[in-house]
Image 1 (cartoon, rainbow, N blue to C red):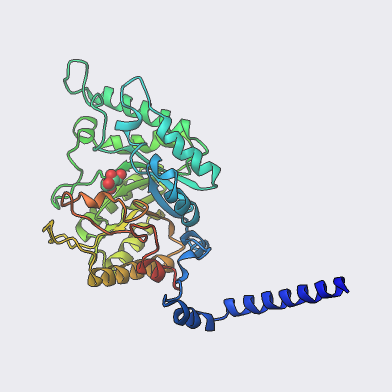
Image 2: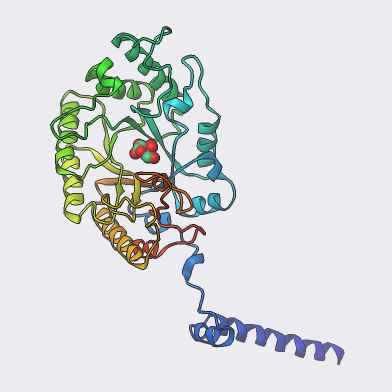
Length: 375
Ligand code: GLA
């Protein structure tokens, strides 16, 4: 008897549980939830799919990180949403090679280790750039500019040491960054690399990187790649390199864009033009500033509904076009994880908050995120 009462109770409990499960999973519940609790239904922000999952048939989705972002809530967001990492700063020569005879590997190693532990690709950034260089690089012991021979030997040693260390772990390197001048009438940037090393520093950098890791893909990386005048100069450089047999595999469109740049037309033109050289195209540093270049007032820094809407439309257009060119586009990397912190908070206006990414300051997907994954 006791047994049958118990079985009866258990059956009732099971039936109640089943009924509750069905009820809780039903769309009616959303309304019921609103009525009962006064709260709107929870949007799909806790979706099990991350950005990378939506794009798995298109291209890897990357993000630039600092070692600090590899712990805590940001690291969960990274694991869920991204399939590739770039080091925001710690692989740049000033940080990884602070003295001529010493390298500082720890921070770069942490990023590489995290990527390997979590099955993420790694893009190396960057081997030769005119900024964030160490103070010793262009000078001799007396503080005078080094000769061309010395500078190129230093570049070779730097590239071969860094690339060899991560051989087989870093699948693509930004070898030369921003060698083209912004002034329409000047071809190559008048950096110390160019002034001392001559134009050949570019071709040499690619050859040395290829020698150090023959399997790594080698990229030339630059910004304003959708501006027709600058694009023409970058194209000229890359065509020259290809014709000379220099091992360049791809172009990195940095993708520091805003509400009006690029247009759909200029973005398409860039992808088509660069890929016509047989180059892979990657977007390497994507963010969409919510300010136009003309806006300079630091007190006008709200993420208004209008800015949110325009940013959403811009992201939607960008990803629609990128998806369309999935044969040409082999990677898309965001520059920074979320709106909590972006280099654009201090550029071009110091201290003006920007909101350029797909995740907000609470690390939640923004409206733009949902447009980017809606296809
Ligand atoms: C350039 C560099 C990046 C980064 C951004 C701004 O685009 O390639 O490494 O420094 O500027 O932060």
